[in-house]
Length: 223
Image 1 (cartoon, rainbow, N blue to C red):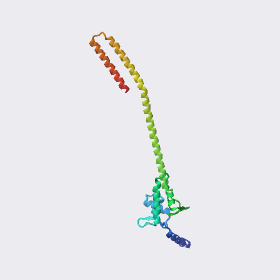
Image 2 (image 1 turned 90 degrees about the vertical axis):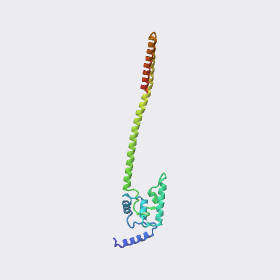
Image 3 (image 1 turned 135 degrees about the vertical axis):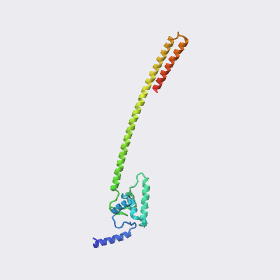
Image 4 (image 1 turned 90 degrees about the horizontal axis):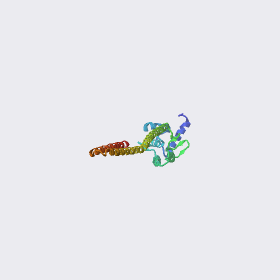
């Protein structure tokens, strides 16, 4: 293939065309798919970079700087669009930002070369699935917790309702008991009214103490 005149001529044409690019890159003749995977391993812990990060990686070098003033301008535009878009209700996607700054043709990504847009990767799909699974489990846990709280609330409301029913009954019973105590006290006072004053006073005081203790005990039970 390397000895093929047509291939040599194509290589020379491509070489000349690369020198005419206003926004050239540093990845040479490597396919951008391979370069993107390699950069992901070296710089992004195995995760392929998005198109904005990939653009910087292929157009900027810590030793040489930017490949051209236009490349630096393009990257700054992408970064500014990304920063402004994040705060909007419907933020732009990475692809929309790239296409807005660089433009796009069918099958060709300006500044990156020929090939499919790397907007959906295996890593992105896996991470999306993990996030969806985490969200599902969080919803299930929240629903379980809400169900438990509702059951506890229902029990508490039932107990309060029962207490409200019991209070009038206890109050009525206490009133009846006090009335009987007063009646018994009056009868006993009447019975001992002919006795000596000291005995009459002792009986009266004793009966009233008993009545007070019963009343106090009933009040304590009610509360």
